[in-house]
Image 1 (cartoon, helix red, strand yellow):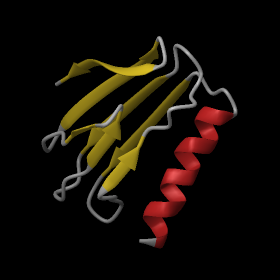
Image 2: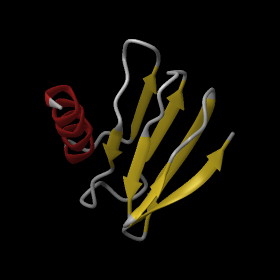
Image 3: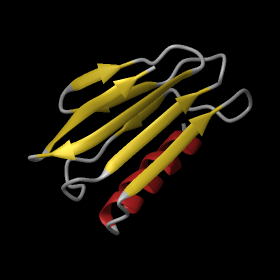
Image 4: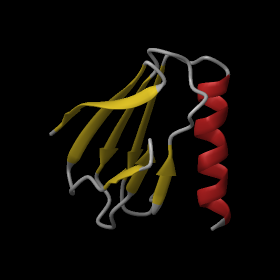
Amino acid sequence: MRHTQALEKCICKLCSIRESFVNFSTYDGHWFANIYLPDNALEGQKFEFSRFATYSTKIHFNGQVIEPGHNTQVSLTLRNGQWEVDYIY
């Protein structure tokens, strides 16, 4: 739980300091159950996630939850104050 909270704070911090692109990957031994994308991110910001871990990760945004499959990559962009999925493959 403590590591998950640290990750959430890290992602929020990256978005709040106006990073235009955040890339995050999980793999066995380095995994988190949940990632929450912040509502206060910079317009046009991108978040890219790659899941290589055996255990799944849920990405929470705009009141929605997606759970990418193993060996899947997801890209989201904040547009008009809402996170939009660019692609999942």
